[in-house]
Image (tube, rainbow, N blue to C red; front, side, top):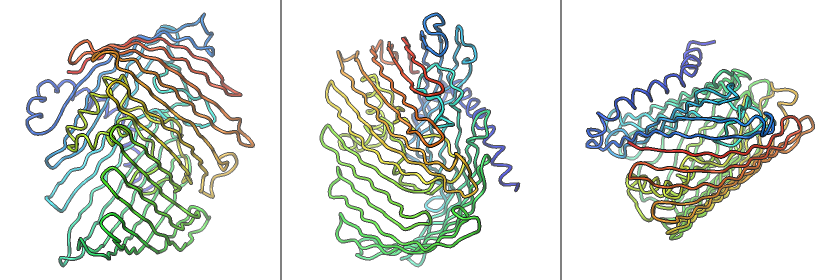
Length: 511
């Protein structure tokens, strides 16, 4: 193992612990630095949530073994939309205690960070993204909804960290250059299933003159992906692109090139690439993008269509690509409720800082979780071909807010080193819906439902997870709120079925 791979693995093993330490330090120092941070354009908010739940689960004895669960979740959010550092970081630490099932006691970290820094003005930059979340290790294993108190051995706490420094500038007044390095690491807590490292580099030269009808770009990239529970692969790619701006709203693109890798074959093989794309922006409220290329695994595509009305927005996204790709657009990635309403409120409040506060306040008033996403997905142990299709709709009225997200995923391992059941195609589809109604300016009721279905394969039986919840929220003060909820979950499986009912009460305070 090389020195660089060893250092990345060591870093990821310490990621959750470092995140916990950072959170504790930030919470202790938050009160003293908040005022100065606000003056510098940095927003800092600390919070603490406490909840008490009574859970009845058929797999643990049902009513005779009801479990009382207490949880405390301190957290903070740090954001900046001006200056040389732009982005946001949100972290929370959940400490839980069970009255019966003490195997479920423990600590859970949740982190979402997306930061960009300008180290040298107009030349050297660095992008950092990081996350810690709970993910399913096996798509055919036991599944549970977010917030469930079930001690599910199939869910793993996974931390990811991506650092990408790059330089950007202009040569000879008419040629732009972009050279970047990317290092990424993923680590699962107490498991090697999720562990992987990815190191890559890319360089792009493109036409710098704006407003012209024709443009061009030359791109070269290299990437090394190493799955600890799987194998290592190396990929190189070169391409040339031509752009034609039909008008201010419509751009056509054609491209061609080659790529070589050892993913889909035992020995390194070279493949021809060719494809094109269309980008259409007829108005600030409507956007459509279509890209398609011939790749080593066949035809890839990315489709994204978005349209916003005064109170409603619609989004359709579809993608077919290999895992580990550098898809900066995020097409096909799960969408959170915050992202849905952030796009919806763009026409109301164009300033991103003010819009962020507006969206968070709106979701809190409706009793909705900003981090809620469409369920589905699982950990990859090799380079995988991923097909994802998703449609979402959102409505934001004076008293009523509704969201609906539906998706379908197909995953197939491309690595020829994989054998047996690992080679089988995994198909998942499901949906999630939320509806809330404001009873008064300070109180609301909401209902949410979700379903996740995994289809059977020749060697694995399918699963079906269904959940429905009803909640009530009350704003007790400018910074304090309380809520109560009921949830019922059914999981159908040939190996580990269960039914779970839970009643919860929680109190939240923002400092």
